[in-house]
Amino acid sequence: MVVASATTTRDPETGIFSVELAPAILPSELAVIDPGRSDAAGRMLRQLYAKGRAAGLDGVLYDNRDRGHSVLPPDAFPQFSRAVYSRPFVAEGLDYGVAGLIRFPFPVIGNSSTALTRGALARSLGRVALADQGAALRSYELYAANHIYVYPGHRDHQRDFGDRLFANTPLFLLSQGSSGSDQPLLDALALCLAAFRPETRIRLEDAGLIAPTAQMVLRRTMEGVDGPADYLSPIAHPPVFDPARLRPDAIVRLANSLAADSIPPMVRLEVLSDFGALAGRDFLGENQSELLFTTPTAVGRAWRSFAHERRVTLSAANTIDPNGRPLRFHWVTLLGNPADVRISPRDPGGAVADIEFDWPRQVPVQPQIGLSASRFDLAVIADNGVTFSAPATFSVSLPLFQNRDYRQGTDGAWRLRSLDYWVDAEDAYADPTIWPTGDWEDGMIYTAEGRLDGFERRFEDGQVLRLRFGLEGLGRADAAAPQRLHHLALPTESGPLAYVIWTTEGAVQ
Image (cartoon, rainbow, N blue to C red):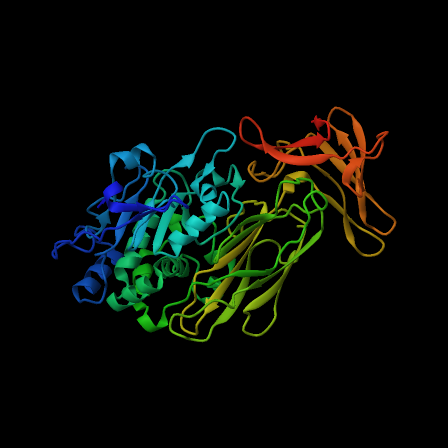
């Protein structure tokens, strides 16, 4: 299948190319799986397909986006149609890296075994795919259009580096490792889609539920996930998937067991009450927001506020079961000490929940694998009485590198006493596209009533400034005349964000 100007239409507003082709008509004698494959999963799929009880992969596209660097072998699943990009598309890089600008009208399994490996902004494609609201929405739109992609976690999830991701999301799959680590996940996805019953796959495809259901199947069948309690726990929902935990035969069994009238919904998440911090008052960066991205099934936020406690209200009430079954919702803390995250569903069905976060007492650590991380992760999972859904997720990125010191006052309230903005070698990782740095430490100054009044700022060179909040905002308390200070987070020449301090006379730092 050739992706070219003649076979696509480009949306001038979004830049997204819609492919206007049907899948290739395949010879009926093509095997559903490599005839030489003899493991239990291969034998089972072959038998189910021969009996007409498995849909196979006719009408499913494989989209390789790394120019053959880590390609699913053609004989592994012969029924796949395969995307081929024309020279002009290749020249524009539209065939390479993170997916989002090419949309196909049928189910897609794809991969790009690549990463940004150089410079100060090196990262996995998992972070690139959520880099801003536009990128996250493109990832969601693929997910909701029966596309599912696999990218290596690369150095964003390794023992030597910790967990550097700023969100956990079901919108794609990340594999533990680097180049080639995506192959077992591609195999698992192909087994899953091929094993769906013919009538079930039609139902899933029509409802835009191929990708969410495949996510559920892979998670529900992983090693260590042996029952409902395991699925409703962190063990089933890692941010990065270890290929060694995949159970191919269990994937085929579960996928083939799904009846068309029992398929799970895609959870639709809505933020009813959000972080309400004010830029320039509750945190420094006047040109920044605490909103990283918002999609209907994955949400990311950044804890910029100086506050010790944060609150949100989340709703899954807009989730609709494809077969009209009543739904119950389960809320799960995937990452974070339970003492720091309190989830309070408003009713027994759990459609709406109030969430309270405390600044973490300890660095969050990934369960089972022990990787430290700088975020909280929550999941909400729908239960239609027959099948669990894939999770929808809410993540909060934390600036642990700031070494915040909170103290409890005589009134019982916790207040920030000090924080710094530089990054030392021993500090927790700070994503430089989210967290700006500066060469100072701020000691907080409070009024007698406990309201933040300003800072005593100590620079690394020993300079000390006293800053106070006035009617016009933050300014120097020791200036002869009022001097308003503005803190802007701007990219440096090499890419990372840094604070620039502006006055009415221009930049001063």
